[in-house]
Length: 194
Image (tube, rainbow, N blue to C red; front, top):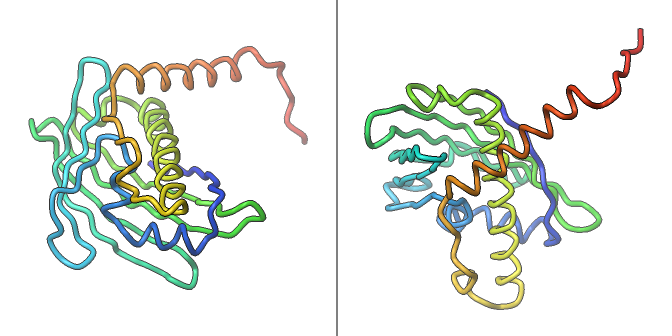
């Protein structure tokens, strides 16, 4: 499933691109992610843990930078992993493209996500909502780290990233799902132009 999103940060595109060049620093912005070692040039091993209500899934796997286009300010990361308890597998091809804006930098993200096993049973809508919540948290954490760097602080002085909490993610994803249902059923019907 392809999930696309975008956000904007107030830093210049070159500063944001430099930040994206430090994959361990970028990983620290994603709730539940932990890079455990660098296994080669632009290749990493690690885990991603996500809790949805009573279900906690922890994927152990690897990620590698498949493409880094300096001129286009575009990076592609290929990642895959398996749940530690054998309940599913995940594969992700993530593309981030940066472009300058009058107020800073626009970050366009495309996530081509494939789930199997128990992880796939959550359904496309819930997976998209959870991914959206995690991306918003990533954006906030990234912005905080970029601001720390801009102020001359170490990004590690920024308050640590919280783990991907099932209750918080579940509530936020449920709110998104309810808003989608509300828009679908309760907004006035608008006929399509012929």
